[in-house]
Image 1 (tube, rainbow, N blue to C red):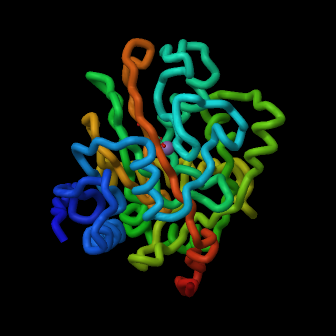
Image 2: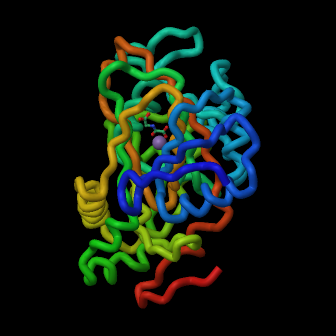
Length: 303
Ligand code: OGA
Ligand code: MN
């Protein structure tokens, strides 16, 4: 094994050095990355130089690559290869999105809400790998919240209250939060809501975690206003500064995060002025989220 690991925080974020992700990894290096990823839910690989194919190949180490939102909506995107989510503020002709562009709201502005990738898909998202090809000179950080630490810090009565609750996730819910009201039939058909436990256990670390996002709408068995207040309270709790890491991007950074136990959001930058070209690959969770649910009794489901 040749790679080096540098903890950025004690148990949430680490940097991985001395590894070139263009090449197939030595077995020891891959094992070390997987082990680190069970402890640190966000890994930063600085100074990479990846083609789209190399990006996809590295992602395969973390499970099957999920279809993108563009693919689910049969939207043509000639900027990226299949399997790659285009996170840039650039249209397919190379121009920056304009203020009124629907894609700017649906993709970029919605990414500024706290969320986890693909909790609304079946199967849900596991690992996301976001790679910076170009960045804005100022702004545009990405922030991450540790939902395991946030769960640990909940009051015992809150843990009991939410331990067996099940929430509905849909990408359209987060877009509604943004004020978008109109969706096409194709969008409604592609993104029918899915049910997810509010609390789950991560098998690799046996750690319990909140599983929340701006994609949450209804909570089963909870009256609508109460569900909305509960979600807002949990989002506010989980995104307090002690649970949050802010990443200042450098070109060539690849960030790997675990969507089962983190939320993230993009921060503001002058996107009508600066191009910011990030590309993401997300892999699917192999285990249905319900298998990781923690029962109200505190008993953990087995795998
Ligand atoms: C994403 C995302 C935020 C950002 O790629 O999934 O939410 O800062 N990105 O671009
Ligand atoms: Mn995202």
